Image (cartoon, rainbow, N blue to C red; front, side, top):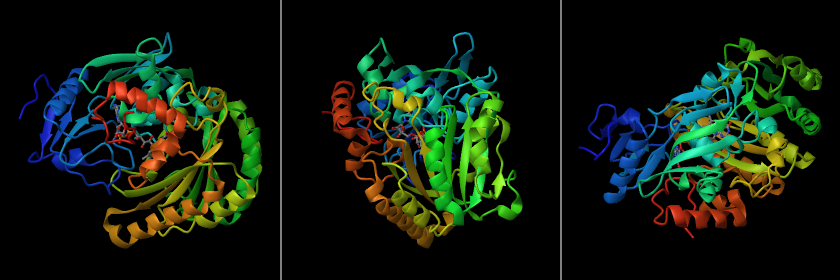
Length: 456
Ligand SMILES: Cc1cc2nc3c(=O)[nH]c(=O)nc-3n(C[C@H](O)[C@H](O)[C@H](O)COP(=O)(O)OP(=O)(O)OC[C@H]3O[C@@H](n4cnc5c(N)ncnc54)[C@H](O)[C@@H]3O)c2cc1C
């Protein structure tokens, strides 16, 4: 089989690599595309889009393959697979990086840190740059430097027609607005250009763990700590069991615990001051905050969420950390059946909240905390565990109902989140604007294997 003008690899059902090539991060996703077009560059992506349109094929676009709903792969159609396009090139003089559409955040951190630079990316190194950025992009640096989309300067996009455009503040500004939060709805992004900032290379970073019994006290303390925290301090709360990582004392592995994971964007001493009160709170099980190379810290959680395990997520933005919300979180967080399941709460605010809400298509700028509830089980535990973990996640979200902000981070939605939740993610006004831009750039909704915005 051939695609006119395509020089990458075409992987069909009879190919030896077919099963590996169709697998995504979430092992519970099992879809069988007719064809995987592994692109070697922008020209391949354009040729693949044109081929798909000419042959009326379903299209899925794969960046890092990390989306929990498995939208990077479709049944029967074509996967436009950018996983071989992972180059990152840094210009230290103007502090920018050009990043190919299949790169992972570990690739970006590794190359930018050579120059002591970084930009806001995800908290797991094997997450894709593309999907994460197009949905908004939250991470440890966001309170200082904004979301991933706030650092996006330009994007090269293959449109639904198979033509190549540049989107930036000056070129196709409406498309550029939509790409910054509107997900994969508007085309295949083959290159991102990001602004970079001086970080580290050594930063004050790491987790502090407390026994699960102290969750209510820790969260009440954290509520005030987060309000007072300087913008330089990014924190994520993780509730579950202590992951069995080599850096954590073995006797603590799998113990139910709450962790506050910190990363300070400034000088090490400044970071130490910012986390002092946190480290002194109560009696931690372990305090692993230390001067740490930023790039290594960013990969520290990678082994806790490997490829191929089965995952099911529920998420919401929170109206605040009231006593009521904290009570629900403390009550539900440790009821999962599997010791691998956990919940994670990101602290937003700072630079995220200072960008006007209509400047980009990311819609949760006024929210201080969100939560993602991650049911996890092993492939050979399917049946009963799958049911237990999905029930746990759904009940947890349901119990949070009175404490929800009314919005949700689009990149945390799972496959059974109804289309109504996509509107919840954007809010009516932003959704309508996205739908109008979609009608201009993809009127036939060729790109719909995503958190779909229908053309107006
Ligand atoms: C373990 C884990 C940790 C995470 N941590 C964070 C975090 O810290 N911060 C955060 O913001 N999010 C986080 N996420 C969520 C993450 O943002 C989404 O899963 C995102 O979809 C991942 O992007 P990807 O490129 O790997 O996804 P893929 O599954 O490859 O793609 C998802 C969708 O994005 C679109 N897409 C992908 N590539 C392209 C492209 N090149 N051009 C156009 N559209 C494209 C397509 O619509 C595709 O269906 C995390 C996810 C996981 C699994």
